[in-house]
Image 1 (cartoon, rainbow, N blue to C red):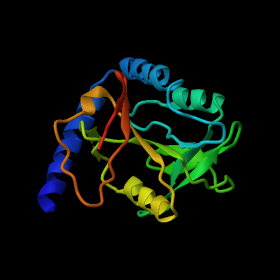
Image 2: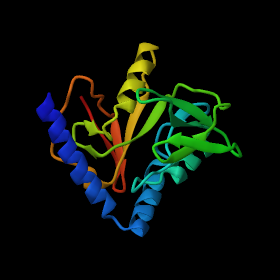
Image 3: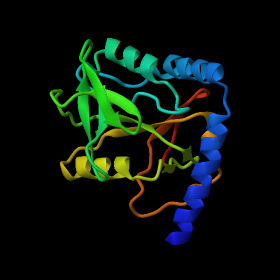
Length: 193
């Protein structure tokens, strides 16, 4: 178990360094390409609850994608760090005040509705061709997904990354949750069992 954690930490560090090395202008172009690829093709019905995120550090900026999904009828929410173990998803409505929500990002304040997402757009450090992912190490998404599943909810899990974050193999652990697809600047890569 410790060996897998150490290996994951090494992979995380290397892939985040590769992501950091992408010039800001190119990251923006890649982010816009993601919105073009998925903005009209991700299955979204009116009222579908989609959890996105605002970018931190060198993450893809999926705000253009989120705007396209909203225009197609999706209800948007953002993750909010409640404590070291828990994130919740608060509804993002136009014009609402944004507050510090942890991890250097902002989002809806405590008055916003807490929603259970039908689709999660998940940031990550690394992924492989089987849909395994490495997050940032805190396990927030794994626990949030487990809580949703305990409620009988099974949201679609779409990773968000750049092509340079793909690796040959991610060390898989029992608590890890596989992705259904990953969206990169090259398009939507779907995984089958």
